[in-house]
Image (cartoon, rainbow, N blue to C red; front, side, top):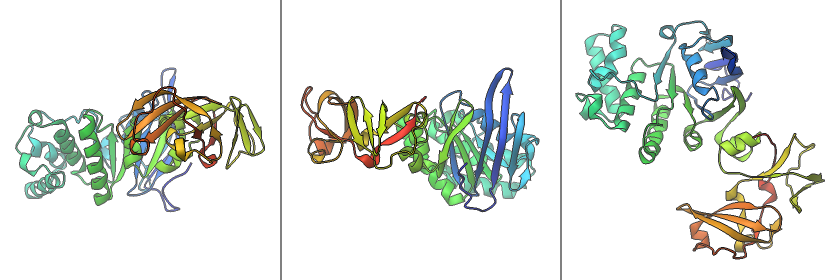
Length: 360
């Protein structure tokens, strides 16, 4: 399993972790490592086991199998209060009867931090998250984004070695979510705290993570850098979960060419042998259309069967010679919305074609 430790001892090491609820095996032999200061996202659909995995690492649930080591020490059987982490929940879980400063100070109070030190630490944290002017307000007086910042400051109050984030931005609207994920990443880099975040939002994971761990049905499907997983997914499931994907049943492999739906397409990197249920795949954004496609390899004669305006881009549904295709084209490159039925040549660059196992 790829990791981000670069050969150094990992800060967090999870090996062979398993968890069952009755007959349901929700975490299956999960293993991965996280380097100190790394930001790792656990990504997957609802019910894949990612939140259970986070709860096992926090000690809120006990594993049936496997080990968890943090900073070189095994913590598998320890209760949460004896583990070194801060956590932000999806609901933020703020105390409604405490003001902002009181929420942030809660953990410091619980460990007996002297008042002067506690006050200074709270003030520093509120300044860090941009809430100094709101110290005396209560959670009900704050926006969702402000509540998220309070929860983050509270999680960081005891200067934990590990920060756990359970869908921390999912309750926010799209614009606030995009802004706060950038703030979160900048803050994590500034503090250098090792961070593990659970999310089902692929754009969120791609934008903030040093590495992404994709889970499916309790198992890890693939782990790696965001660009690696997006450009070279290990399976159809990973490819589709990380974004739109054209996927065609591969009928035959003829040397360095693949045959699909009557079309013969050259491959830059043909596999030595075909995987189970092979699919030939390409991202819609990698498809060239119109003048850009002319004279290129794997040129197909197509026509426009549908259009969707996406703002910066136009999604074209193309049909004709060979397989049906989706192509995402920057609007500035097209300059207009093509008419239905309009001829639209399309080229599939050989370097962008991937052969993946199906089943996703």
